Image (cartoon, rainbow, N blue to C red; front, top):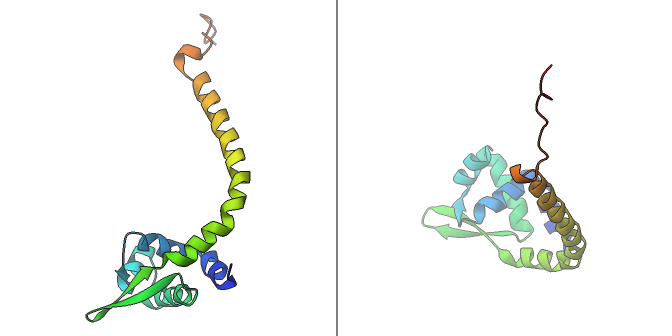
Length: 120
């Protein structure tokens, strides 16, 4: 996995931009506004993403639209695949525990309070 991709994904603003681009191509102004960034700051983040190969620029008349490039993400996904086994086991155990706690909290499964036990 290229270090440029990892470096690009470290920043929360860049991850937010990638998330916004899941909805389709967008100009820098819309991305900046949605992320609460200045346009120059958003442009710097987009340059890092572009250099890492995560986004590309498509001209649209007078505008430049930024588009998510899924190829590096597919490579990242392939690299992470073996580690999912570790996470899935833990997440499955957590899910079973949460299901158990949820069943215990159902009104029909709660122990009844004794009359008069609430009084001070």
